[in-house]
Amino acid sequence: MGKRMGMILILLVILMGAGCMKEKKADIWENETVKKEIKGEEKVQFTFQPLPKAIADKVEGVSWKKDSPVKLEDLSYVKVLHWGFDGKIHEGELIVHKHLAQEVAEIFQILYGSKFPIEKIRLIDVYDANDDLSMADNNTSAFCFREVAGRKGVLSTHSYGMAIDINPVQNPYVRGEKVSPEAGRDYLDRTNVRKGMIIKDDACYKAFKDRGWTWGGEWKTVKDYQHFEKIIPLE
Ligand SMILES: [Zn+2]
Image 1 (cartoon, rainbow, N blue to C red):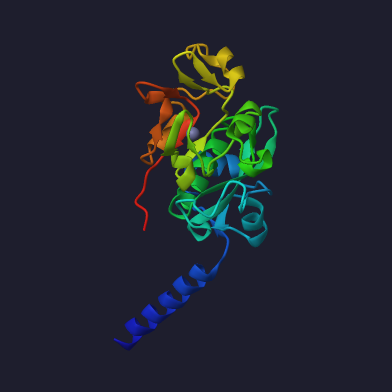
Image 2: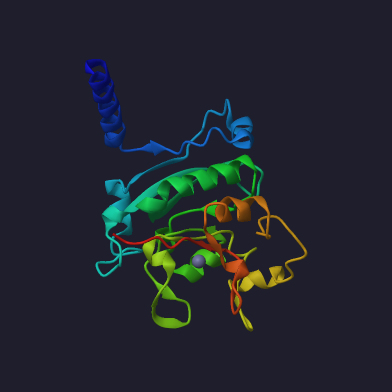
């Protein structure tokens, strides 16, 4: 009995210690592909943590506002590595809902492991929280407090940190004649697969879908090929 209590105590201490760590590492090293690709890599970096003060200061009043549906404390800062269109490894940063942070870090580890090319991953605040500018620059991003394009008063799932847009130029938003960003018109033919495009059953599609995310490329009335979302209950 005493031995058991001791074990429980040790476990508790370990758990508490882990809980106190600000920066956490996503743990999916059991994934063989990822392990093979990343093993021995010095710059391994797929972490998530509460918004560091510098980041919170940066987003406040820009992508996050006082009337945002989620609190700053409910958002996480995720750092990832990704393969760029130049074939080199780059660092990226995302803000997502805290309950999706680990999953998002894992997804980007898988994208990295499968060398799925992503041109850039910057906070949308770099573009003054202007989604059109971010998309036109082919930026991959997640959290942004905003309405759904063309639907006033309807909040986008990006407002909750529950959506991610990937390579918007190669994966445009299409609604009738409207294509966003404009450069995405070159990618309307989804059978002509080029670098950075998301296609059903590819590594990117599977990384999200396997975890219960919805893909905008499978929506019926509009197609939002860049968009993945997972709606989770708010506390
Ligand atoms: Zn989106």
